[in-house]
Length: 400
Image (cartoon, rainbow, N blue to C red; front, side):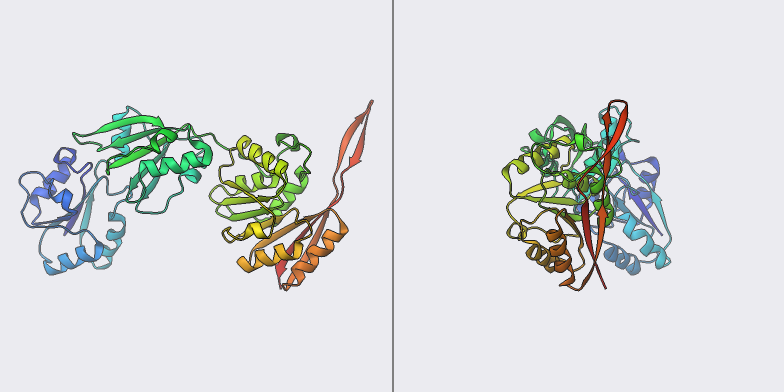
């Protein structure tokens, strides 16, 4: 029999009465060294500083009759090692029970006098974490980060600040539930430069939320200047052709005003968009539209394709809005990086249409061409006349 016990902050005072009784009745206690050193009085001296599942199973196999306990910090149900161990115990037919403890999210909420049921809970403890994506997809709710290892409150705040979210309000809880407990308030920009205790958690609040809606924002929502812009109806169709997934890596080659780049970024909140553009005026508009729509997962790459694509991560999907005559080289580069990349090419001239079809078929793809002809009404006295926009071709390629 083994009992998995959450020790909360790791001090005897944070144990539940059930947890205390189980520890005092156990003949063997396992867990991290720092937790074993904090055990309450009346516990056995038969202790082993181990907690990895394989080590725990080996210790139980060596002494199958002992009534054992395994201590975890925090709560056994909140990003705890108990989740990995429990199915292994059951698979070996080892009887077990779980006694939960106080989690760090509960301790922080109590320390600042708030409820936490609306918080988004994220672990950055010993695992990869994208704080920008987590905050931008929180729907305006506070985001709680459990930190540890390489990810600290400072490193997470640094990445938020680098993405333009430096004004976000943040709280850091150090040594929660212990005598050394501190609650610190500031902004992501301020905390990116600070050092914090190893036992710390982070709460991020008041992050601007990107607009959420189906693709095809009104043209007037974007900064345009004199740079050509992909119109609303074409943008919506292009995103449908690209079948964007939330975590995709996306390229927008010849990004112009960045209208397609912004739509791609909002459609892939857990991914990243690279807007490639060589015109200085267009680059300025991309920056403005990125800020207007809070598209923090959009990176501007200033340069001419295909050379500007060399250092970008392999794409899942690519929109090609302009290549300045380098269509074949751009398509070659895309498919060299990912032969299965989804490609949608926009063309207004017949020569561009021909070049796009040739570039795709040269790689063994079946080129599908869709023509979009959009007319919009214009008032003329008491009447409304339809005024046609230039027809646009969308060319996609699919493997045979």
